[in-house]
Length: 292
Image (tube, rainbow, N blue to C red):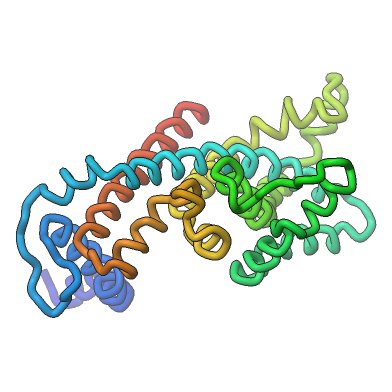
């Protein structure tokens, strides 16, 4: 094979090489290192080399009641956040897809929470959730004198965080749906109207079937984001009260950066990776089944 032939074959990979080097340094190498640390004891004194302990971290993890609680909390978060994001953002996209005056302004207004910093949003929502915040003042005005302990009650804390996540993500997923809606030909709706499919009925007959790839895309992205939620927990509840709002990622952060138990945190990260991988495969399988 001539040198020009070899150069033609290698040419695409040479363009990819800089990106592969960067990914290798900041993604692949740390991932491999974290995997190996899962089977070691590496804590407190990080100047000492890791000590190989085999499956001990996984045994400890299986007996960790706090970790089990964080798994349950993460699953609750997943089930509580994904359906509203999938459904409400689709309804919002249908609403702002109408040809109305100043509709561009409404699209921008609904998208604003996405560009707001999570730190700013967290502080604002924390003020709303205070015992004398706007929400409780409204509740007292309608007769509920005690208000609701949004962030200090084990029964309310995680649901309060979900509201913030849904509020922050609606605009982002609305834009994804909006792109799909604008790719649907108006002639399909005109043909549907002739067959009696008009009003909201046309969305059931035409919009939702054609939007199924976008619906599954939003479901996958929002599910992955829900399993990795951190900022809302860190800013609003710090995992409390009594671990009621502590998620796997926040518990991992505590172990790694507060207690410096690096190997145990890597073990939790590996378990979370497997959970997300299974979730992604399940979503992909369901997507193919529905589209076929």
